[in-house]
Figure 1 (cartoon, helix red, strand yellow):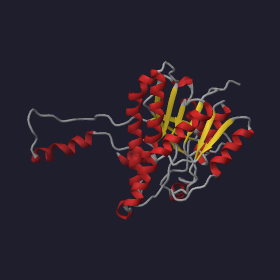
Figure 2: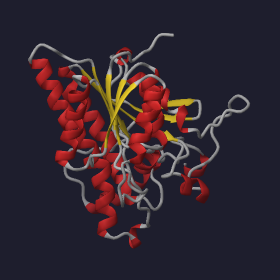
Figure 3: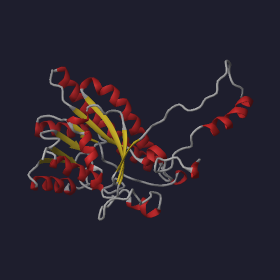
Figure 4: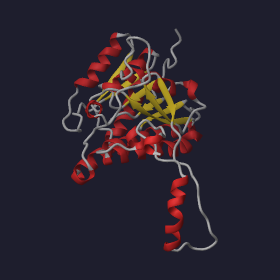
Length: 312
């Protein structure tokens, strides 16, 4: 069977458990050499241990693959630099960066303190920017030296960032930022042969189990074959691996949803209906026209990304 990522060097953050672990295993099955990064923290970002990253490396080596562990904090500038250098040192280069690391500290806006906000923003938003920045610098230098890599970045957004989940002001803001960061980076890195895409996965993990229990995430996914678990994190891995392969060169700047056997291309913010006059609006005039303008606009999507009668 053809291995789509044979010989490619892949860095995956937050790869010790859940979705990241499944990405690491599938990349290895497809012939990639994998740097398994995981700080080993609790779901809220506290604590650290080496075990999760080492365990995934052992799994990959047991299947005959190549992998090394890294336990740097990806939201730390120097830690992110060391992570990218770990791939270059161990395997001679870097082709793919998958930014997956994340934490949750869910509270409603009126109960959230600044530490909860800053911690989540740091891990998700800065923890996506810093590794991507160091990877991009490496790819730029390789391109300048006449050794361009067929480079790929896969970032992780969320339905919370795209559509909004109550209790996730911090997380939603970070994930919305990642979606936009992906689009900007795709335009900037194209000159170096790199594509940049993002996913917003729906799967059962340490970070989502409470949301499924609370009913904020719909546990139902499109029906599949008997015995198919639509919430298995492994369902998301093939999309991430394909985006990391050499076959995805025509796809960049996109955000994909993955849930069960369904893959969706998200359609982001775009200009809707408008009103215009040839001079400055008065406050009173806007009171007359804005309600009608909003009525003509499409409603915000629900958490599935769909427009339906309940939010129309």
